[in-house]
Image 1 (cartoon, rainbow, N blue to C red):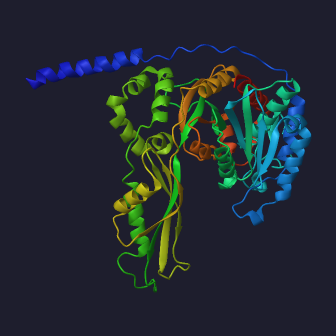
Image 2: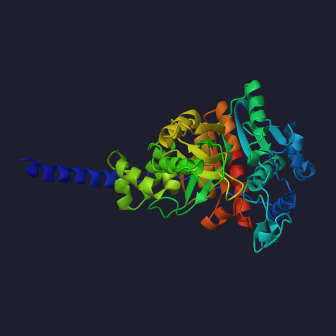
Image 3: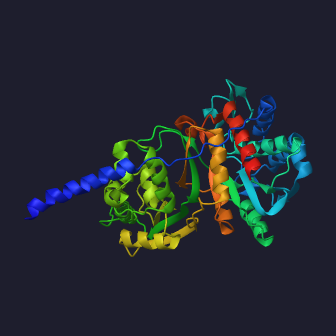
Length: 477
């Protein structure tokens, strides 16, 4: 009789899947009140251009850092934003940390607006225009750091200067937290967070770099999406090493240590970490999935049914979708012999892991050991940070951020997401669960490629939007 029952059950399942997809409609949202501002656009771009000329390149070896360039920037912002320095309490933290407190009517619900102003090095030979001359041409400002993240650095200061000139007093204390060593995971932001902790300051909202207003990043969704990171994956580097007696390459054993390590790499790559659906990803699927085409809505409305299929697709394709679902392993470095005819006495492979959900750097190393299946391999954690906590999307801070985004980019769908990269804001997760990672700009796929790349530049219109966004955040906080 089963052959009679099965078609009926299959039909019922199909009906359930389709009905759930039909009911999987976008959430009703209240349109925010639109307000606009008359900005000094020419002045903003002049000041931004001058700050781009400061070669604030960070390095893990501080002896290689030109701190005079950092001081040059510090002196410029004192001249450019005198009202900020007049109204705000200012203190320098370590070598490059700049911490401002703009006193508000209350202290109970302070917010923190963050940015870093250090930049990564440049290979100027591969640029079409100089990276540190602040050239403005065709409504674009060229230069290292325009996108990552002197744009938000300038936007925060411009917004504050604009409002202070108008006599605005914030409802709550507002902190501006700027670091000059984020690109090298430096100690400045942890030191700032430690100050907050000692002073019992618990932010009601922290905004730092992260997602942006983008298009074409979610299956079946054509609209602009404003992606706000509410968590970060952890990061760890793990080195696998083997040793041997070395010797001449003319009479090798059947498997050299490089060969054995290579087999371990293949074993690990053939056995990806387990599939996990974490809260940020579930929320993203729930919000953006409702705006996708019908075939994708069938999947996102019925993850209870399609998760195994999604897992298989991610395993096979890799890339960003896969990185949302599991801890990833990328072998990026290898070392062996210095000569072609010498067996290496020591060889190693190093992997960069991005940790998801319940995985930690300790549990990840144990997983690699198990899948490598070679007791002679030594494993070493070079450094690591575990995944951050998940920030709340049911609070005043999230609503303020949401409204400010939709006032600035009315056509964008605002959604939480999971960040793959690391930012300074992860340190604030020690003291608050209201940390949001959003770079306040619209970025095309091409523009996203400029970040840390050649010919980095930002449109002037994007800069004005950044300033307006921060004005709106401040006025609603």
